[in-house]
Length: 190
Image (cartoon, rainbow, N blue to C red; front, side, top):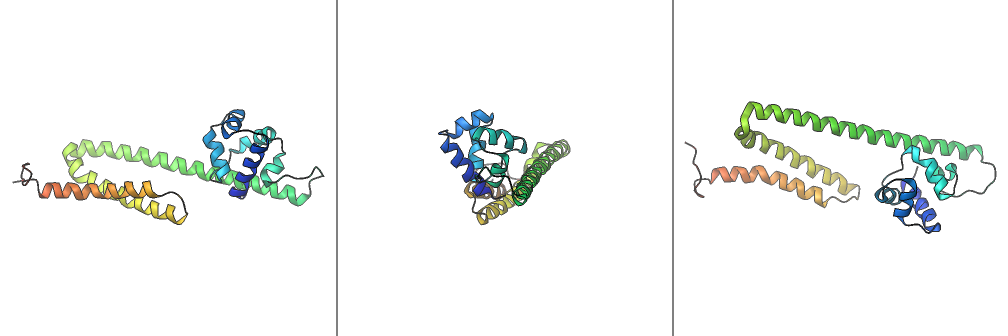
């Protein structure tokens, strides 16, 4: 299913009805941000929303899935097969998003548990001087890699790049601060 074609079709139908994104969103009980994502081609509605979306916009489910209006003649077998394939594509897309969200949740939970153990083992000073610079450097490298990936996909990447550079700057700043602590009147290690 073509994201851009789908989004353009939804936008055209919405405008034909004279609705704003917010008005369509209220009719479907979703946010206007969700409608905006559909129309920009960066997301699909949940599979459960296809039927209410079709009913609200006054088209058939097949027309929604094909992203084009059809005449009211009987539906040829190829069109029905294409619509079924589109539904399968949407379900696969939504499952991949769900898997990604589950993976992110598990990763964050594991990182928090690890952080608790690190704090307990190393105390705050050890965590700040040893673990946090390593974590920040790793985060910086990841965010810079992510921004490069987003730039290649022609998506917004400047904030991700800036956060990555700031994360990389933290360990360097901490190292320089410790090296020149005596010059700024701080404690000097013995």
